[in-house]
Amino acid sequence: MKGLYCIVLAAGLGTRMKSGLAKVLHPLAGRPMLMHTLENVLALKPEKTAVVIGHQAEKVKELLPRGVAPALQKEQKGTAHAAGVGLDVLRGADGVLLLVSGDTPLLGAQTLKGLIACHKRKKADITILTALIDEPFGYGRIVREDGKIKKIVEQKDASPSELKLKEINSGTYCFNIKSLKQALRHVRSANAQGEFYLTDVVEIVKRKGGKVAGMPVEEPMSALGINSRAELAAAEGEIRARINRRLMASGVTIIDPENTYISAEAKIAPDTIIHPGNTIDGRTEIGGGCILMPGNIISGSALGAGVIAKGYSVIEDSKIADKAQIGPFAHLRPGSVVGADARVGNFVELKKASLGEGSKASHLSYLGDALVGRNVNIGAGTITCNYDGFSKFRTVIGDDVFVGSDSQFIAPVTVGKGALIAAGSTITKDVPQDALALSRTPQVNKENWAKENRSRKKK
Ligand code: UD1
Ligand code: CA
Image (cartoon, protein in one colour):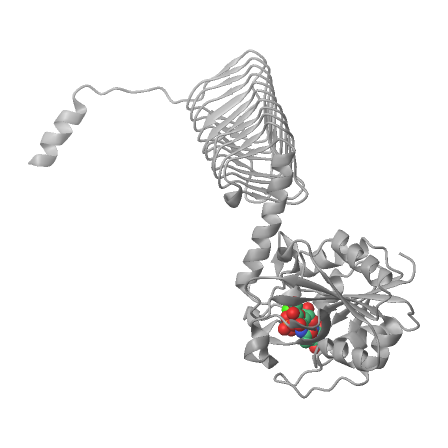
């Protein structure tokens, strides 16, 4: 947007968080709080954006995308002082300044655009984004006289009657840059917190005959300022609710939206049913008609159509083809590939393993660094011994192989197509196609030995 400059305030520690981590670095929906605000601001394509940093400045600076200028506020003397530090970095800026706090991450780009439009329409010196809320505790209150904004009074400086006001300052404003610069020179710190309040510029500008306008947000929740962990949780809940509402509107069934945790980047096709307690992280893609029973954690993975995850499975950076069944209690570690109609059952762990179409590993197995073909049956308790304490080795199992229960493959080893591994075998050598591999010691039965042993012990 031409003639638009932005400042994001992010220098405070956030004392009320009671944390060693600067407030704007606290994760919200999987990424630092500041990134949400910054994304919305940058969507407006400002001429230049400055982020005021102070507490843990180095860490905050690392997050800033290219083209965003850091403005170092060495001492946190208040929001007016912070705005001045930001303006110093935006040297030569003239026109409209959009100023937002790094701790109001729910304000969307559309709302910010609306504020700028309102500011221009009203030809105001300051336009404050306000919100009408039932529990205004902690926020600066908008004091009006004959309907017009007179001043903003902070919670700690407010009189009992001002504390009853329900219109609050969201901490987001549009300023005429010249008017703001002038007003900032007159801000003093004679208040309950001994800080230079940005909110004081309202009275200063009015005194000089300037125009102050207000624009209430449509959705008051979007003005939520995060000062405490409880507010952080409320913001998380709101983001989650927005994502879930969008997915439900697009045809996904979510049985209990309050207990379903889906990242903003996840894509889920219609007619998939998601039971409570599922966490779907990162850029996971899930096809249509899947059923996710309760309690799965799925991250960075791709699931085809009609996949059934039977619950309590962990699926990381893996691919699962159409109609495969996973779990309950399966663990797909990074690099795993499960073919169409294949099954990975309870207490089965896959790591960099690929299970071909129609193959089954139904119980208690570990398949690591393994390439398993189609229609293979992996018996219960099968283990690929892929690690010798130094290096990892691969197991290759061809199509149509039957692996009896409790077998071990000492990798590297290759089993040819159609072979049969007898239950309880330890496979140390390659097995030819269609062969039977058997490595059990012959069984010895000693008649009456157990009975005699018992009577010996009794004596
Ligand atoms: C501020 C407003 C209040 C408003 C509320 C909305 C002031 C005086 N008060 O109060 O009217 O209702 O936001 O959420 O502005 N910061 C700096 N440098 C500083 C001080 C603060 O960069 O020296 C940053 C903080 O990191 C934060 C933002 O400015 O991101 C707001 O500061 P905070 O202390 O949270 O202000 P509030 O008390 O919430
Ligand atoms: Ca705040």
